[in-house]
Image (cartoon, rainbow, N blue to C red; front, top):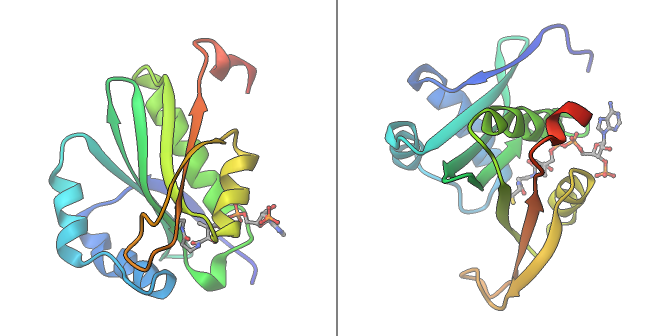
Length: 156
Ligand SMILES: CC(C)(COP(=O)(O)OP(=O)(O)OC[C@H]1O[C@@H](n2cnc3c(N)ncnc32)[C@H](O)[C@@H]1OP(=O)(O)O)[C@@H](O)C(=O)NCCC(=O)NCCS
């Protein structure tokens, strides 16, 4: 598929259906509309969407508290994956957080989610711990972290 027009911007309430469509296509137990609305109303939370040819192709949701970024959710619509959207979303979120003094970024990922683990490793995350049986179905969670240096943005 050839992408004509693509932009990353903050999610608004008008994007809810598009974001839910991506979420439902990506996860067996997806977030509900109410969970997205809660995040939109939470002052420490941000959601960026990638809008491609007028459709929501992906999104990232993160919290920023005291220089620590917690990535809660990142997803790309299955038909739009492997085109760099996940990486663009991640980097745009880092950029926004650096303006606010980002020190480190943290996330949890299913130990078997190799696509996501590769995305994070490619973008500077390292495994920092493991939470055995963390998910409801018993799968382990890997805790991953990326530390940021003060002048790092200039070098990237
Ligand atoms: C994990 C996820 C967000 C990655 O999204 P994505 O948009 O496919 O990510 P990217 O396109 O940046 O990278 C994916 C791969 O495509 C490759 N790629 C990027 N641009 C490319 C291009 N133009 N042509 C070919 N390959 C490309 C990347 O190198 C990467 O390859 P790798 O997996 O072998 O390392 C996506 O798989 C997803 O939504 N999964 C389901 C939800 C999920 O598990 N989320 C994470 C929860 S912690």
